[in-house]
Image (cartoon, rainbow, N blue to C red; front, side):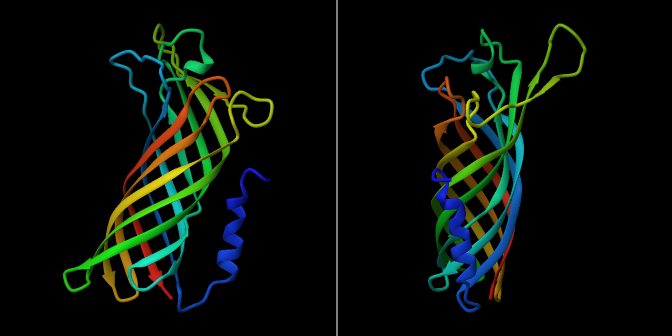
Length: 217
């Protein structure tokens, strides 16, 4: 697919891995997400965020001890608590939940402190993602019935787009144990593409204090 060439960059990175130059790891945690609706005026008490999760693998090429670049393939659950594109009037009682496979390309730089036991670092990058699942959840406030769930149709000729791309930024702190590191990290995603074909609806999400582990070969 021409629209998602970055998804195949992982094959080059992994196949060219050198034992002395690469680090591998995993991280995951809680995600809070919403969508940006442009000039649409929301009610003052509107709750637009939903709760989700994220889990990612880490493949980094080391440029010295504290600088590296690499890929973070993973799964993230995003969405929004208000879906103006799917209802004739903005009522705020329909939520959308979306699950993406994402592949950001990241650059990381750190600063060692406390005799190099602690590393403070920041990351920035760009990535593309593919929507692999999604559903709408509608609540009828006039009854005690459970929410009505409807699978989301997405992709070509559908109202929901099947892929997204955007910018990533992260701040974190790691504890070094030789070639191993345990870290806490918070990440922000700034989507650049509208989720809804007919409405401004760009994804925004924050991963709060992800827990992760990385080791250097």
